[in-house]
Length: 235
Image 1 (tube, rainbow, N blue to C red):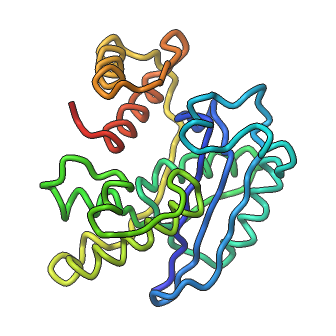
Image 2: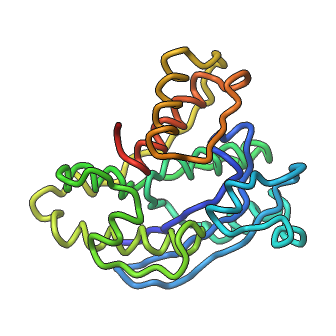
């Protein structure tokens, strides 16, 4: 089996408003790592949010000489030539940003996906949290630097092999590829219920996250809630 594990770091949670700042990818063929891809990406924004630098360690100085989005994506297209399957932890998050970036260039971005977050939810329902760092700890997967794209892509691939070895014989359907799709939703303002829920998550986990509720859309809030719940667990 062949797939490319992929991960990105971004300036936020909205594929339309935020930008990619790092892409990491690792190709596996029959369980063997064969090729790697890694690049920082200049987001062409006035500033990177402090919370993103705190999370990833990526600074504006590090991005100063990085390729801009179009160049980085062209390099990624070349790396992914002939590839059919992308793997990631919450792969739809990464795919949505990459798909939107490709769309800005007028290029298609069509792949099938393997989602280790979904696999973890199906196979390990007893775990209260199933983010990548928790799952890596559960399976003894060592990472040199969490929240960096290449390291997280590699960790997701290793997690896939662990879960597949443990559960694929009894549940092959959990490990089947699925078409990846991202459609920009109609812009609707965030709902009062979403605002209350987001504030509750932020307060519960003491997050240094300050969404702009005046401009946040309903779909953006929904993705933000899903990502935070996947990372920190339900409240």
